[in-house]
Length: 244
Image (tube, rainbow, N blue to C red; front, side, top):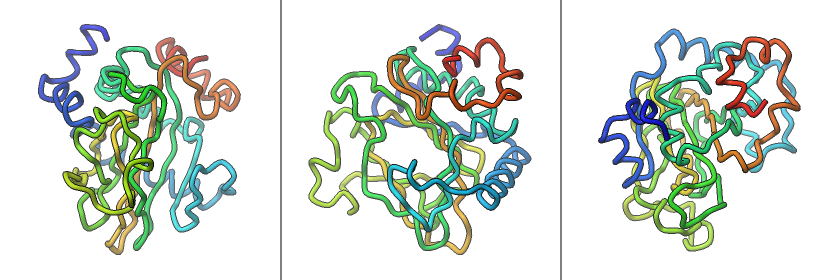
């Protein structure tokens, strides 16, 4: 990781990634950005036909929108914000490219997941094959199902689905994400995590952007799906990150 990238993170943020396996970056999005992203996700969910065959876990009650790389300029921040990129690079050891971007947003009463890993490769190694970034588009709290995270689990070298009797149950040391809208939680692909039930009467809107090591496959390959108008507005740095 470059010295410039390290300067984007405080010592405390780096320590949180090292020890806890995640960090919360505050004030990444302005209120108007949050509102524009939510509006766009909602519109796409209402007007696009959903392809359930591409979902690793089919959750009809959830609002899921994939391939937001083509969703509009409001999503460009998902792969260009310097603080978020610095945190992801720190997790991955500086070897990084864009993996995917979508939304998994919980309707009232839904959203509970078993604890799991999004990237299984390289378990036990210092740097996982992938890194997740979760962008809070509402205030996340226990009541609306703030994401379940298990601090330190990234160092266990274990998959929760293989070692827990009931991965859906709460585990010792588990925390719930509490962060205001516009924050980003960055967590490595080996950190145990899972969605929690939304007990509120409102949607829990979320943007998810993942990054991975350069020898890991994108989902799907960006070069195969990216629209021409998106490609044309990319900087040289973004072209490299997107593996174009």
